[in-house]
Image 1 (cartoon, rainbow, N blue to C red):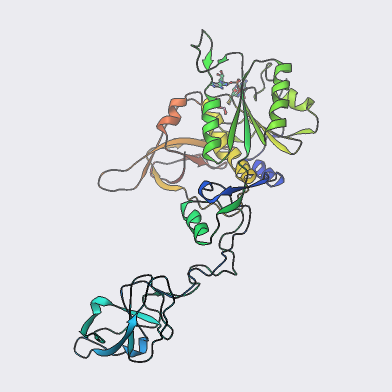
Image 2: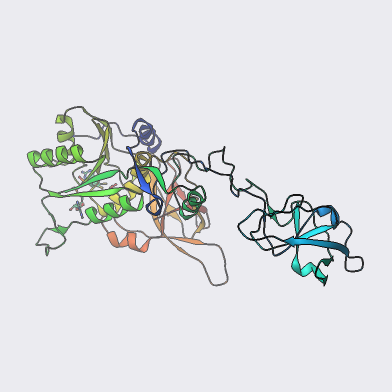
Length: 410
Ligand SMILES: Nc1nc2c(c(=O)[nH]1)N[C@H]1C(S)=C(S)[C@@H](COP(=O)(O)OP(=O)(O)OC[C@H]3O[C@@H](n4cnc5c(N)ncnc54)[C@H](O)[C@@H]3O)O[C@H]1N2
Ligand code: MOO
């Protein structure tokens, strides 16, 4: 009888991720870099800002000229001139002096702070009264305070969000080196699986997994490459797998990962050159009959056919491998949502149970509640109802109503 072998803990499977390498790099225009992963340490060609700059409309002063100033006892300051925007002032400031300055203006030599215009009064064309004291550095961004040009502004392996793109703009980077988006081959198998544009006949189902897995790949920054549906035929499967491995960076096949007589995936993998099966069976549910193989340095996944199982395995196991291929090395700061379980939940020991949950909160602003969505792993609509997954630990028998849980968003 065929059996699972290498049944592995989730940690054991994830440990294999380190043995796969990031894909190559390419240069993209700044405007195209959103969502990409930086493949270089990015520096600025100048300090940012490159001059000490006012953050308020007012008067640039030496802070010491205002010490002790108040409504009852204002400081009288001599106005030396006006700072023009975008140019270095051609005068300096001494004790008891001030210069008109707008937000963003360059501080004149000698000035170390700015007093807001609303804390001053104009006595005549060249004299102001200051009613407040300011501290050195107040209302000023110092030269290099945002980014110093000798220090890396962003580290290689960082995912570029809008704020990183803004910082790259400040650094003068019109183009950046990023990792290529990994191409992920997607194959569906099964004689009963038909394309979306066909009305399924008796005993047939439409191909869900190609679409849902493609979406997960895209959301993770990869490019799905769809290889369609393969019949339960060893030669056809072999041909598709070879083609997918030759043209993509990672392959996911769904269905045919279990131990049934028609489950050819393992046989095909055993025959492919330079290919070894790393894992067949993971101690998780759903998703136990998952295969991970290495073929010519590429990860090859056999995901369970059930639509929920395939998606859960992607979220819990495949995603960290794809992150690695994407070149992500900086910690991805994604925090789970903390919630309270709405009902008792049974779970078997010896495996990690991934439970779909819907999040809700009452209008009074109580805790976020996690309501389990129970249902078989072939029901895609249970994933639609779910906002996330909770993992019940391998040694945990179940969770009680009211337990604190962490929800991985879907
Ligand atoms: N005797 C045993 N039978 C099964 C076991 C087991 O341990 N012993 N494990 C079960 C579990 S758990 C799962 S999950 C499935 C996984 O089986 P396979 O990966 O071999 O997948 P299939 O048998 O091909 O398909 C399962 C199910 O999913 C439907 N399917 C397949 N592909 C798609 C697709 N692209 N879109 C939508 N639906 C798809 C397929 O028609 C089947 O209904 O094995 C259990 N059996
Ligand atoms: O573990 Mo299978 O992966 O139920 O649904």
